Image (cartoon, rainbow, N blue to C red):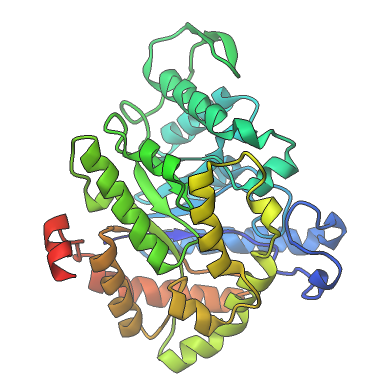
Amino acid sequence: MRFFFFHLMPYADLDPDYDQTHKSSWVTLPNSYYDAAKGADLYHRYLDELEYAAELGFEGVGVNEHHQNAYGLMPCPNVFAGMLARRMAPEAKICILGRALPVLSNPLSVAEEYAVLDNVTRGRIIAGFVRGIGAEYHSLAVNPTESHARFHEAHDLIIAAWTRPGPFAWDGKYYHFPHVNLWPRAYQNPHPPVWIPSQGSKETIEFAADPSRKYVYLQTAAPAATLFKTMQSYRDEAERQGYQSTPDQLGWSIKIYVAETDEIARAEAKPHIESFANKFLRMPQEYLLPPGYTSLASMKGLINSRKTITGGYRTMEQMLDQGTFICGSPQTVIDQLAAYQQKGGFNIVMAGLHFGTLPHALTMKNIEIFAKQVMPALRGATAPTEMARVAAE
């Protein structure tokens, strides 16, 4: 099992009563709620937490991209990756999970940013590409019906910029460049590894599993039942396309809290994981899935999954039952992660060890106990082969 520490960087000082007036922390929440002095302190605090995780032996840390919201203050994850690149433990990777390609006007800037970071870190960048959730299309006024097509063209342009000798011309449907001639070139050959985080879109799974790519598929924001389904969908798609995928092509992004005992862990985590689920994650359906954003088949699956994780007030106990949160003593967390790995067939864990309003002291405690007591017990654990996994069921 491979471990990465993931941070959303929320505006943890958000007025707890904001939702009495506003229906979401996304898109239309007035920025008058933002206090610059508090925000500056939070940025420094969050960078300290990321650096501490790298120091304690996580394989890497993850940052991501969201726009115009209190859920995650990272509209430019490349900037945070740059701040981490020189100060973080020199062996740790930086996962940018990821640039939302369809909402950006110039994909070549992403190719350049990642290439610079890849050189500065001497090959420790993991390049995440996402379409961005529906709210981003509202925030940045991008037509959601063009999401898939813009994503594919932007992706192809970036890969070409990294791998084809330049200069060459690019004349696509959305992007036109008479000179594509990347300086600097990426440090890793042929390019940084690409990971695709997703909430379970059928089209995204097919894209990531394509044998010409074999990208890591990282399941996000889903209950355990959806995790198992999408992991199997990736394996099935790989088999349909003529090869057998490996557990290192599959990962899970999951919120986790660990403390001395189950009782202490649940008491410490409860108010903060519930603030995450009911304050920060809260958004109306039209923000999540604007018309045309995804296919009808994928939309049905996403709506059903989203109902599980956003319907009504969500308690910690419900999240534990659904498998959208893991919480307990080191042994409890070890046992649960091992069980999920055996059934899900993944090797990568993107551990969200901060969430909602969890304070700094508890976040650092969570990182330390997880790194020193959970990770050593599971580093040698590998997901079973498909045949063994099915036989076990």
